[in-house]
Length: 139
Image (cartoon, rainbow, N blue to C red):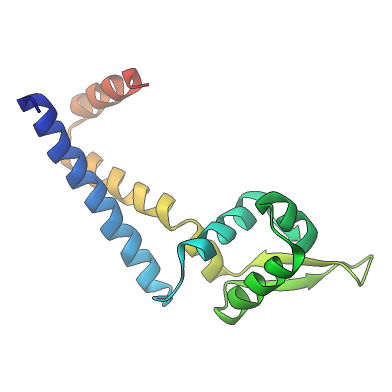
């Protein structure tokens, strides 16, 4: 690996570790040390789509309704989601995120914002503009 690549590797590795530390801190604040990546995936899907029915979440994740029910029961026990009955049809329940569920679903976004705040705090305006210009070229 040439010197440029090695330097870039070290810089990006540092940024990724910083983001990971921020994410871990956010998840730690949510007091869910035993949450799985699959559970976080489901929380993100619910967050992306607003409130969902069990059928719609099954469709989006390409899983069976029993699988969805099992996952939602687990997430409910972790206080990440709750069920809300449809006011027009009592057979339908919507899956909604609790504040804790929202925080977990958005932990990576919050962590990225923290990393950006650290970058902005370390650079002057001209350096920030140059960084933006350079990063826009990356495809």
